[in-house]
Length: 332
Ligand SMILES: [Zn+2]
Ligand SMILES: [Zn+2]
Image 1 (cartoon, rainbow, N blue to C red):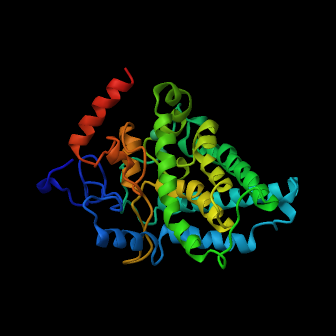
Image 2: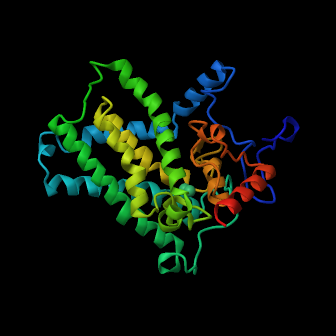
Image 3: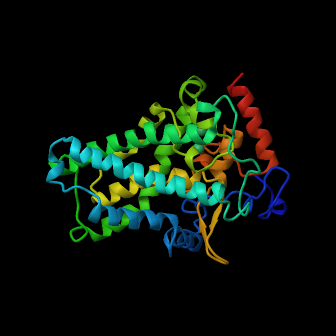
């Protein structure tokens, strides 16, 4: 941890083109003593007025009304609706990842404003398929990632259509409907932290997770670029909908949160600059630190798992030194 007078303000440093105020903030929900005002503010800024989470919630709502085959149709497994879901997921993933890629890296619309790393995507590097990070990341994302996401989609939709998964409606359970939106990011954070920690066990890391970590300087397509086994583990959270009573909109939201949000969380930029003052927070320096220093920040900022289990990197040089030591011990 950094001491009071060592707080670093947002800006450029030797190591970064840009970084947010340090130490990296995490959700205050579990602070002790409690911080009710900070917690309320955190929830408000997390959802309102237009934030990334709100965009996925609205997209889930629109998808449910316009882009989902009827439950009647999905009662029996048939290629027609499976392919429809697959095509929809490919299109959504491409809109998010390629849209961000073009805006930030292709057309360089905001130059290096709010860009963390000075480097860009790797070219002529033999660790990547076709020696090119962009095409490698696109391939893993669309071929493996979207296919496995769709596979889980199909299982859960069959569950909803046949009554194997508990379904609620907004009119019957309005409070639970809204509450579930509030707690889903915390559940996701828990699942992600532990799956991710397991992926860093050296034996598994070498065979599976190293595929994701070849991208040290990350960009939108890097987020969902994973080994198929990692996709199976990472997306397995969707099976939760066989247990918790939810509306399909929650399930759609979670799918988007897991898949589409990897494009923003790995964008390499903190904010999307859309106008003079219109900034949409997209990136997360917390995970950017994970890609540079590996054995730290296995979770995300929604829950303080890293702080509780001693793997938190706050962005300071002291934390970097500590993490380097841990890395040496783990991989010797
Ligand atoms: Zn990552
Ligand atoms: Zn990792």
